[in-house]
Length: 205
Length: 189
Image (cartoon, rainbow over all chains, first blue to last red; front, side, top):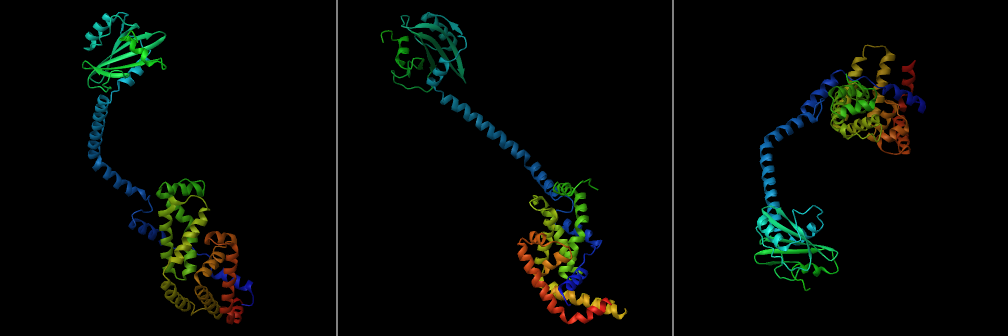
């Protein structure tokens, strides 16, 4: 070898590409099959194994799903019962624009209607310091709740009455309380004078 | 055959797991892979093992190909890694058997052919004795005809490193084959 060019020519000749033997494909194919992914798509056997596993576990998964769903529904229902917040409900009803079920400005008629429809005794005084609008009865689960709507001056107010078992502060003087085996809550659009809503029963306030 | 308009579509078909696409990809690259494996190992049996390993790696990992480099470069990297991973003992023992077979095959030929066969065997032996990183650079250069830049991309080093390795390989080969100058001229006569 006298120079680099001669060497490169020899290298190009001696290291020239060669055709692959025909049996190479068969070897690759066999080795691929042995390795389980094959020349055919590798995920295929995995999919089959996954499918078999999925089918076998399907009944168990279905039962578990039903149990979880039932438990969730039970907990939600239970939570709704126990967590019924009359104060929150009073605020919701204050802004409920739907027509009242019973429209009247007569306290005695409203008391009678609520007693008949909900089995409750709101005991609204006949001599009240507010302008009564009427009432409606709503249901929360198995609980029937009476809603009395009225005006105090230019403000709207709502009294909600429910049987005991709903959450309410026990002390009268709050916006929610319990008395005579019933729970009560008030809500008013007059944020500056919330006690104004109490004139429903306490006309002299 | 899978109807593919380009290599990208062929690779995509393989990534989707289409069996015929694998075969087409094999047909496309089998000669390149086998040539590099054969020139690196110097032995046909070992070359078959390396080529087989390379295609198994290719088929099993083609979903990982993201197109950051060209697919051909990716294939080159696979075969280079297979070569470098292959057991060193095969490289040292079996090439000698090939040289013996080459000599036996050429025993009945003319003097020029005998000299040529002897020269071929000695050149291949000299290449076999190069360090792996120098040998693979030589093979990518002379078997595949890659440029310095392409070799650097395959090997993951700079073109300067490739130039350095090729220069060292050339010098080593020149030194080992210097005594053959006279025979070389005779073989080409």
